[in-house]
Image 1 (cartoon, rainbow over the protein chains, first blue to last red):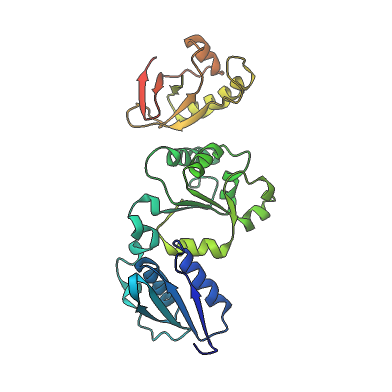
Image 2: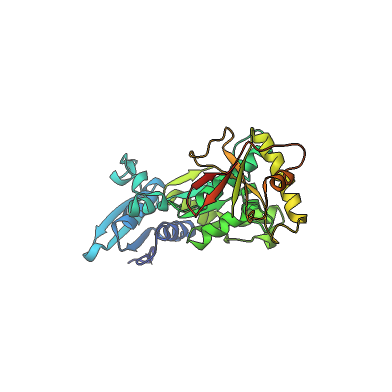
Length: 213
Length: 93
C-alpha cells in the first residue's frame, strides 16, 4: 500500500467491533485509503454500509473462506450509495440480527430512569417492571446501554439492581455512559456492568437492532 | 413460599409496597434482606393494574398477618401462591 493508506485487521472480531474499529480509524484519519480485513459476510456488510453512509467510496473484495477486504476511499463517495446501504433489509441485516434474527441480537437503549413522561412514581415502577421482565427466562437482549439518568438504574441503591445483575449473570452486557456517571457524581457507585463512552455506544447503536426505551 | 397480593388499583399497590417494605424491614417474621416488591403480572392472574406485590418467605404469615403487612387500611383483593420459577400461580385467598 502507499504511504497514504492504512490497513486494519478486524478478522476474528465479534460484531460490532469491526465497525467500531473502522470508525475509530476513520476518525483518526491521516490516510486516503483504509483497508479493513474481515472474515465474514456480516462484518463485510456492516463495515461497507457504515463507510458508505459516512460518505466514503467503498469496494469490497472477496477472498477465500469468506474473508474480504473492504477498501474505503476516504471522502470519495459518488453520491450513489451501495446496494448494502440502500437495501430495504439493510437494518435487519445488521450484525447481531443477521447472526440470529432474534431478541438476543438486540441492544436496549435506556436514556432515563423512568419509562415515559408524566408521573415519576409510575414511570419508575414501569421501568422496574420492564427490567424485571427482561430478566425472566425467555428471550433476552444482547446488551443494555444506559445514558443520562438511565445510569442511576445500575447504581448500588437501584431498585432494579437485582434484575440487572440477573441479566449480567446470563451474559447480557450492561454498559453505562461514563460521562453521565461523572455528571451525576456517581461513578464510584456503579454496581453492575461497566463504564462505556460515546464512541463505543454510538458504534453499538449503529451496528445492530436497537430498542429505545 | 412466595405470595403475590393483588390490589384494586395501581395507587393502592404502590402504597402497599411502601408499607410492606417498612414492615418487612422491622419484622422478625421476615428473613434479613427480604424486600417485598411490585412485579408485573402474567395474563393468567386477573388484575386491573397489572402489578402485584411479591412477598418472599411468607410461609409463616397467615391471612391476618398478611393484612397487617399492609398498613393504612389497604386491603388486597386476592392472594396467589407462586409455584416454581415459571409464571404459575395458585389462588389462595
